[in-house]
Image (cartoon, rainbow, N blue to C red):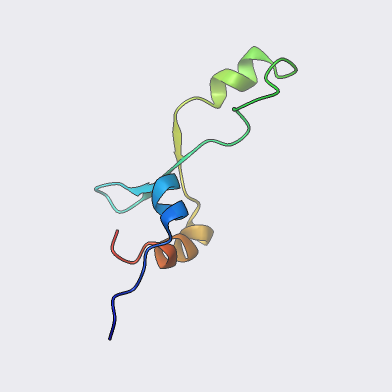
Amino acid sequence: MPKMKTKKSASKRFSVRGSGSIKRGQAFKRHILTKKTTKTKRQLRGSAAVHPSDMASVRAMMPYA
């Protein structure tokens, strides 16, 4: 059997934590920030975890993570 390939776009977007959960960046914080409130922009800081319903598809994209 040949090795499975990692989807490189997924490896750049996601990282696996020590507990096994997958870390992702927040969306909607890159541009068009003038019309967003300060509260919205503040709550978009930091990272978030991938939802359990999406976990299987993300793990399939990164077989060795």
